[in-house]
Length: 210
Image (cartoon, rainbow, N blue to C red; front, side, top):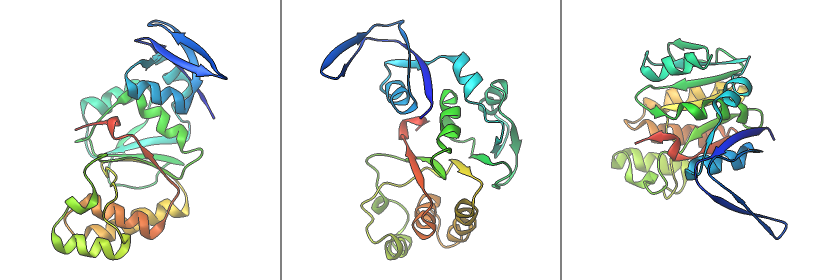
């Protein structure tokens, strides 16, 4: 598991082997990617920009965005390759980005690294808004015939990191087909994920501002 350097912005107490250790604001430490992102999401730490830039930009990856935006320009300044176009797996690791999603730029590199273990990384839409509250009655009924239970969270289709592999290639194909069968892209993506069954990592909903 890769490491990530963070700087504490508030005090944090952790326990290792029954012993407590206190980190104070301003302390810097290297953590596993999992724990670093957990601390960042809690708001008690921030990534060190130098580490994000030197360890997080994939040589074999890039971003396909729907349009130019301030955020895509910020990604370019961090040395990410950005193209404007339709969803496609151009690189070994590709991020598909509808720029209507206000994404935390400091977390771009983390998801690319996660593709070393997962076929796709997609943020959750919400922790409380589940599939049964989305779409119309007809689409919900159709979705239930595939998913079986609509009391499940859905993913945010505006931001996806995909590895170039047969499962993700099939996922894009099936998702495109499912979008023609209803009006809710979130439900269409949920159906596609259940049909194809790629190895998916659910990133925190807090990665995208709502």
